[in-house]
Image (cartoon, rainbow, N blue to C red; front, side, top):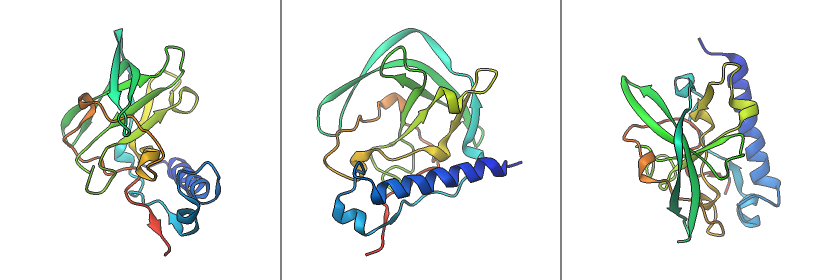
Length: 184
């Protein structure tokens, strides 16, 4: 059964992001694009893409190097992995940290929606310990919070590309779609 508080929180976060993109000077949208911005396009919130999962922490934290959208390179620590099921099949996503002391983890992923319904290079998911850890230490991996990197909206940004180990052959029809809506 769906939790109405959860749906309300997702919708609130989406409104706040749209407001930020439309009005804030830190928005990746150009001033001209902000003027015609009518909000991001999202998949409807779907509790089927919200999981409570154990982070299977890797004993040895390997450095993963990935290219950026501008050709540079970024490094992450491969911290652990999440295993989850969709439509009877099991999938694995690696979770990363930029530094060992980070309290949260970062997931970069591509799925079968990329390049069709979502940004072609992939989407991101930030998990914050304060918001996304349960009292028993599991993580709330909620793909309804999946978002496009800033480079989806502006060439001014260098975004890490999704490592091949996080390319999924399943559609995750949750979170931000692409492109955003314009009122013009």
